[in-house]
Every structure is written in structure tokens, then in C-alpha cells.
Length: 295
Ligand code: GUN
Image (spheres, rainbow, N blue to C red):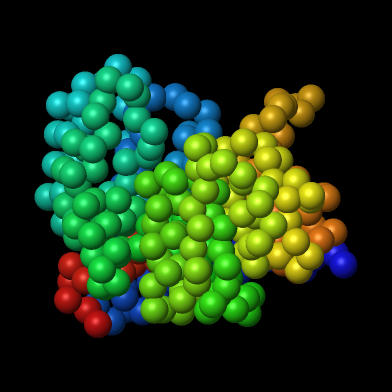
């Protein structure tokens, strides 16, 4: 069997069309233009490319976007002042501080300083708490994108054995939480594997759905999965450069081998990545509507 490829590019395109219509209507009916600011500290090439893609997408959808780039030696105080400025800015509904931050800045202090009503990443503890409780909130973008990929591809999650590899605050922990809830894309039985897991392959072999978010290229191999497994690959690993200097990317899954056993699989690039950006746009539109009191 060769797997059906879940194209994040295609699913993201469909959601972006829906958002474009929503943004046009917000402007025409309510004179509201959703606004997003991205704040990048330092010159990490991967972060630069993510932030630039976020701004480009916002622009294409008619969302006002501002990009703030701060020097790598910016102080925590200066970054807090920048966040505060945008907390007060009436034209900005969503604030995104690109992670990771340089070591001398305390990430928690920065994430806590973002107004929860503008926290389109869903990283503020108020939104994390609401998410865990199953209340209405901004869902973190990558996990939200994964749920959309699964549900729009018709993958049954109810009662499924889901193995998640990686316990990060951005992907592993929130997707585990969301998929065990009584919700669309939920009701699954969750196993969360991490660096201290004793027999990763044994867990993976039992899984109906594997979500890999570890940052180790091609870690999930064909001998670790059962026939018919659904594989969502969150990894974006830079494993080299082309002659033109373009990054060569690999996921956390050995795509070529695993696709011969899987029923569905996401590619890298073109899988989860475009969905993360799209869900950020969705959250920004949601933030603009909530702040303006539009249903
Ligand atoms: N770094 C990697 N993923 C993300 C994300 O979803 N949001 C932010 N702010 N930083 C990231």
C-alpha cells in the first residue's frame, strides 16, 4: 500500500479562501481590518523565514501586518516595552513573538506580558488554561492545524490509539490535550513519548495515528509503524543546502519508506507548515472580531 498524501498546502488554501471572504466582509460591513504584528529578536534564518511567510500570508488575505525586527542583544525590558506598545495599539489585534528567544530573555516573562485577547499563538497561560478546560480560546496554531488536517481528511480519531512523539509546549503537550477532549478530532487514547521513553518503537507499532514533533530527521522509520497507520510529521529539519544555497528540509519521519505502509501521511515541506500559518491568520481574524464585539 502507498499512503494518501495529506497536502497541507491544499487544505490551507481552502481555509485561506474562507478567511479572505471573512476579511472582506469585516471591512465592508464593520470597517474592521484585522491587524497582526510579528516580533522577531535576532537573525536566526529559520525564524526569519517563518516570520516572513506569516507576514506574506497576512498581506495576501487583506490582513494588516507589521513586522518588528529587533537586534539579538535587545534587552528583556525593551522587548517587554515593544509588547506593551502593541497591547495598546488599536490597529493590532494579534501579537506574535517568534520563538525561540535569545537565551538572555526569559520567554515566560514575555509570553505572560502579551494581552490574552491578542494572544493569537495561544501561548498565554490564560489561553493554555482555557484550552485544557475545553473552553473557547485561541488554540495554538500547529495543534489546531493538525486537527484540521485530520478531520478534513476524514481520519477517525474517536477511540484511536494516538502516539505523540515530543512533549513541547508548542506542539506535544497541547495536541495531546486537544485529542483526548470530547471534541471533533478528539476522543482518542493518547500516549505521549519523549526522550526518556523506554521503547519508542513498541509504542509506535501500536499506534493508529502517529504525530512526530521531535526535531530529529527521519527518526520514525518503517519498521516502527504498523500497516495502515496515519502519520502527521511536524518536523522541519534543515539537513543541508542546495547548490543555490536553499535549505534542504527533512521531517521527523522517513517519508519514502513509511509512506509504503501508511494509509495517510503528511509531507515535509507542504504538510503541517502551511497549516500553522493559516491557523495564525484564523486566530487573528477571530481576535479582531472578539475585540470589536462582532459575532
Ligand atoms: N516557533 C516555532 N513555532 C512557533 C509558533 O507557532 N509561534 C511562535 N511564536 N514561535 C514559534
